[in-house]
Each structure stands twice: as C-alpha cells, then as structure tokens.
Image (cartoon, rainbow, N blue to C red; front, side, top):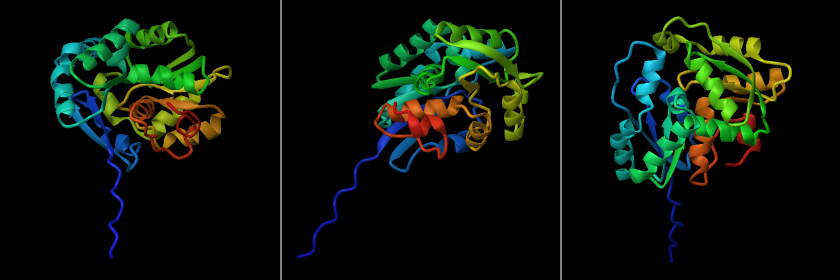
Length: 247
C-alpha cells in the first residue's frame, strides 16, 4: 500500500510595517529563512520639512493602525515596525508606546527596530558603542540619548555626511563600509549601523572580520527579533548576531 508523505510543517508568518519610503525590501528578504513567510505593508505618506519632522510624524502610533490590522488579517503572528528613527525619536517611552499600540491593534507579538536593536546589542554583549548613522541634527543626538537611556555608552557617533533626507536613498554599500571603519572606536564592544535604508547584509561579515567585533545593523536586528518572536532564526551567514545569539 502506498504511504502518504508526511505533512509539511506550516510556515510561521511574520509581518513588517515599513515607512512609506522604504527601499530595501529585497535586502530584508535575504534574512528571512525558507521556513518562514513574511508580508510587508507600508505607512501612509507624510509631509515634512526636515529630518526631525519626518521621523516624528512617522513615529505616531495612530499611523500603524491600518497596516497592523491588514497584517493581522493576513495571518501574521508577529509584526515589526521597521523604522529606526521613527521608533527612537520619542525616547524609550515612545518606543514602548508603539509596541503597545500594535498589540492593541490585535497582533500577538510586536517589535520595533529600535527595541530590536537594544536587545541585539545586549545579546552580543555590547555596552560601549560606536554608532554610524545618516541623520542630521538633532535626530543624531536623539539616537545617542535613546541608546544612553537604554544602558549603552556611546563612545563615537559618526554621520555619513548627507546634506538632505533624500540623499540616504543613494547610499551604496561601500560608503557604509568606509564610514563604519572610520567611525569605529578602539574601546567599543560593537558598532551599530542605524537606519533601515542603508545596505548592510553583505557588508556585515566583512566589517566584523576586519574590526574583530560585532557589527549590528537596523535591518539585521529587526529580522533577528521578529523571526525570533515566532521561534525562527534569521538567515545571515557569518553574521555574529545571528550565529551566536538566540532571541
């Protein structure tokens, strides 16, 4: 008698709410293993005059209601708000408020990029940080304040030298690599690359080998935390966070 093949295990489903201007979908997809399904939605577009106004408007909890409801209806077990500055601009309490709002909208597990970053940095044993970012003032200082309040010592805060918000879309991997090497600090336990728009997937192993320390990026940390929330491991060969740290 012919035997039936065993039933294929159901894939875990995670959801991502990205800001309306997010451009790294294909890179983010590389962190998702075949055993998981992911769905992305976007926030509504917002108007702004500068970097601070942009991330402040994108950091409003009410902006997440529609996208989160859509992901829940499509079966997402956990949802991440994929935006670094949007989730640190109002400090630790603002990050917590975003997660609470997402839970109130029906998702079982909620993640923000900034919350994932602090968890990831703890997971690799970092306390003293060198930070690389694309922001203008005062958003860069708000990032340092958020990390400081979260228990980290920011030893170096290095910008990419961008002159306008829109310049971040044109940043290439080598520019990120060069800035990280320039922005590292000899006493830093790890380097954090902020902003989900920056390309980092292929750069992380190269940087960790050269610097001899963990290098955590915003998208990597979000994927690690989001997939870990449903018992999955993010895929990223030779990336220290993913090889040594379990969420």
